[in-house]
Image 1 (cartoon, one colour):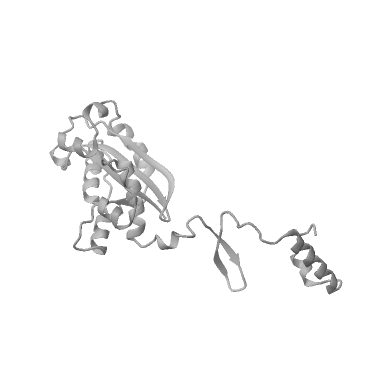
Image 2: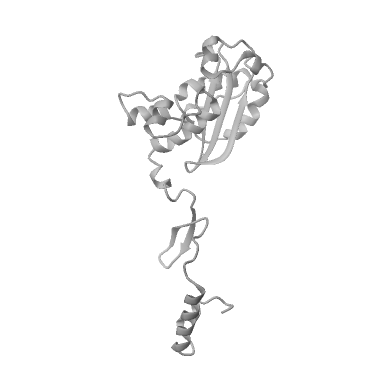
Length: 233
């Protein structure tokens, strides 16, 4: 299943009071594994940057002045997220800013039934304790040492790792994360079977093969083993 892990940075806390979006970071995951596909844009908010917000993310008015407006990136953003569920920490905050920007450019809002709020998931799983992103990284032994400032793409990358732990999907990926799945047809039906993407090196030596062929030669004209030998043999 395709999902998008999303984070934003803003000029403040309330889009209804004139605060604006300044950064969007998205990570694509498929079956809870990152695909390597990302969307990341800084956005000119067309206003000044309050000192309190600058202290959080370090994005200055001067830095953002040369960045595109939201209307210039909206098509690319909507194409990237498609109709996938959106995994967001404290989703009501981020989606309120995104929908405010969508409203300004006369686009349809993102419906809340698409949202997977990891803050709510964390509060159910870990009631009575702090469930900020940094707290969850510490709880699940996820390295967040690069997070000296808030940043939308980095926070989305960390949240993607946290999300896997929150929903209990980490265990199934510990050894078989890079496996592909194949279907084996049997008399009972089609049964899924795991197969390594890179096969293990064979442990049978050439001497073992020669000894086996010599043994087969003692079994008569049509030993059943011949059905399993390569055509060249």
